[in-house]
Length: 639
Image (tube, rainbow, N blue to C red; front, side, top):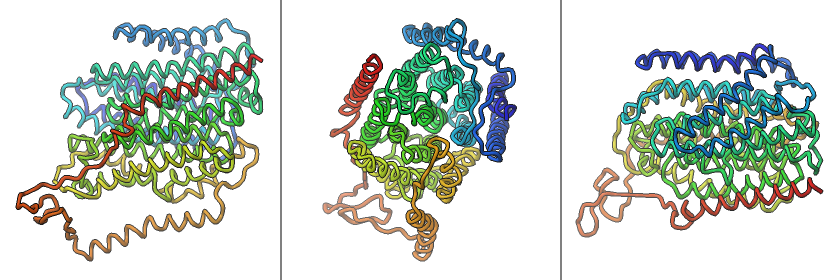
């Protein structure tokens, strides 16, 4: 297992170096190399998961040459700091580099001059680690494969941007290695290095086009994520000085049931997780990240990187149960879930809807982790699984639609089911996966709601009820736009490898849905047993039967629909347009005999609670929640 984990972390970094060395003009060679390397990483992740599953025991160990790796990680921290300083000075944003300097100096001091800490293992492999390995190794790699075809079309349509796809793919592979290292790290110093590496990868990819907007948005993402990194650095320094350890497991166990100073590092880690998962008041960095090419949006800012934040929250969830830290986290999460769901109603840019939806769902996961109960953590892990697959597929599909139609506006997707049936099918499956039964997102929300009701937390119940209502609203109007309206023809330019990735995503989503009860019993029960020592069934036998019936409906409804359409003969149903339909459902003659073109548009309610009215107050609300609860925590620790 030690060798497999070493390869899983280190090999993607070596692959990134190889990709950079390929001549820029050899685009086919670059694409084939990326695909080959991606398949290798995927196979390695799957083999690692299968190898661990044969024993199914939580493992703690060190990698070969741990002393050398400690030195490499220290050098890597310094390299990242120097890179940030250089780029900050280059783009006249030098003040941002102060955050990197401070946290790097703090961590380096702990390593070189701080008190000696108790020796502990650097790697932890358990159910949660394996779940994250599979998300990174399958969903993440599929996005990389999709990116090969997407970037070809992207630079065909955006000739004003310099083609630097080798650099783009190399950063993606660096990200793979950093994410594998992050979720496998039991040592806070190692986790900090991989955490900062993912932040820098995000920064570099957001600024890929080097436009003024891209540069500004990339630096906004950088300083917000560096602020979270500073939180981890503070946690490390406290643990080294006061606890004599940098083991995340030991710190979490010591903090369970406590209300004293030991919660300070837990609070700092939770604060870092809130920044990485783009919770209020740190949500704006992810919204700005949508300026990046779609694969980076799917990989870093929806499916994988932002999961690092909620992954860390789940790791420390048992230490947040019933204290100020947990209250801060679940209030920020619930508040974010509701406000960003409302904001998603008010925008028509497909990628921006997905961005707000991402932040909203991360808010729900955050709220579940903050509660720290068995039911809510169960829901949080399932939400991570279904959200990663669904949102990755949706981002890819919207990117393919944009390359084909030249627009990602929802209003321009009218009649997509007829114009681009394959892309529309993928989009509809992804949307269904986000909010319809029996897909796991809805069932996980139900489990979370039940837990909040059982806990008597009325505020969180209100957050999830009204947030879920807003969620249904924006997904339903998008789905309706795809299924009806104009049918103007358009030529699909989506490449084969893009479809391969999207179809595999769709298949995975359906398999997850069909095997939901099995995954709950085989994976979630032992995971909950590891975290809470004992476990009870979150889904009752009666609810399982209902789910099986609903799963059957997934196949029955499309079959009945197909038979009905076949019997009708595929003829169009004339639409009533307050006049004479001329036969194409797009034009009509009004009562004055004038020719009119039909136009149907959604109402986005921007004038009621749009970004200009709700976003800034939401950020302020998030700031207040964080400051109030951190002040309460520090006040209690001083006493």
